[in-house]
Length: 502
Image (cartoon, rainbow, N blue to C red; front, side):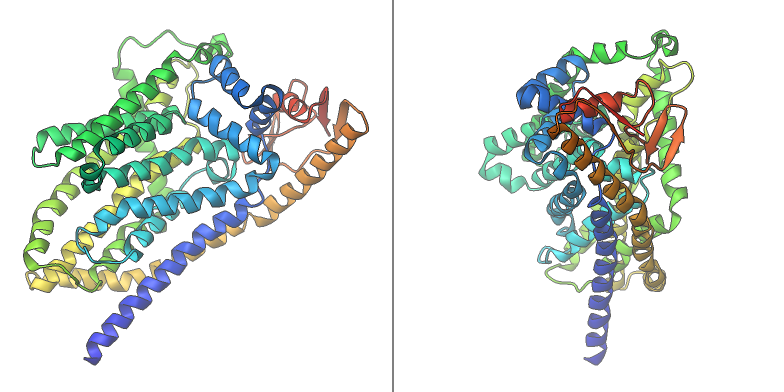
């Protein structure tokens, strides 16, 4: 009896420490995000809303720049509601929504082995996936802390989690078939309108899901109906993207000397997509090897030590022999195809650029999310395999593996704390920027009240500089450089003739 109590205490303590560690990393991101302010494109989208209003802004961007209709609607709504006061709260809001929706999506997967389990399992797994994704994102400031980047690349991943949650709950389709299909189509339509990167990922994933349903007839017809509805919404979203007049206007702004002749075959696009996908995976693995080790080990250890409740031996055997093996065989292939699809739009652009073109680092967060979703869910299922094998006494070697992983996981729990420390190291830089930006904003508004229209203000602190001007984590700022488009967008946002920052 005492041994059982000791084992249970150890299991609970391990889960609590893991939850605190991973949550600390996410809280650190929310804290640093609190010092976010307008930069680069934020001024432009806010300026158009100030000039044309919410609906006028949708028309402007759709006809003049891009078919990202969901992004322009979301960013315009954010500017209309909170203006420049909202960016500090965006990272925290997105992280909370991301964790909640991912927890909901993962709950049916956790229920494969623990049908009577509580929400702790999917919640912790969701946090591990998200924390690992953010820890390995090459430009976290542009992907999460920057309002424009976060809206473009993080927001659709939240909608993806909601869709997956619907997909994995066929009972909802049985009770509300039409409602669920309409919601599914609406989710994919809206999510696809945030960026070309996510739209390509979504269409590929839905297509693979439909093929899997056709190949395996035992999959519920309700699942197939949700996938078909989602694919229809995704196709409609892509159609809106393609017919946007702003696409031609955006291409026309590119320097003519950088454009090649159209590629003669799709082979070049596929090769570039594969190369970008491989570079992304290798970059993620190499840049943060400890984080990858945590994502691959922690879910397996936690689930292998969970208390068995409501699971019979036959159901465990079925899970081990069918679902786990199928997932472990096909998920790496499917994951790579999805990552490759997310880089397809970038590959299309790269095929036209003579001097070479690399994916913008901020969009890699999408590929990283796919990578860690596959890795963490695979780790969880491996843990189920180890747990059921140990409980039925089938393999002494597997039990030894589970014990070894238990020893390895203890030092790995320090990794989220270290990631939080690295994130918090940005605090002095972001606080200085926030203070400088707030002072600059007050000066501009005070000068406008005095009736001045041609303003010269102090520049806020930057982190880098090149021949084109000052940059803050890769984002263009107002400065004294002639022709700096951010100066013009800021002037439009504040409603003055010109602004120059010295």
